[in-house]
Image (cartoon, rainbow, N blue to C red):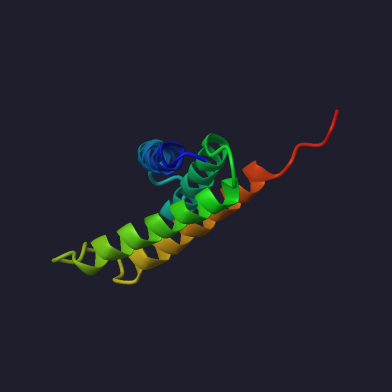
Length: 116
């Protein structure tokens, strides 16, 4: 597999995570919890990454999960002021939920389809 395809798969997965997260927060604000939106956006991101990656789709989804966790933890660790009403541990839990969703989405998307 070419490195460009690998980078594209992870980048598109990350962008889909951001897009679904933003849409979910805007559409479902107050209706469902942010944790559910975070997990679903991870599922979509993992599926997109696995579909774009031609070879080893679960590995690519796993790499994306690690990237999501690392970026979120890094951002939370260096945030200056806490957000009012949000516990200090919440960004870390959200990172784990998004990472788990990404892995599950990649696993579900990379399963072989039954022969028709």
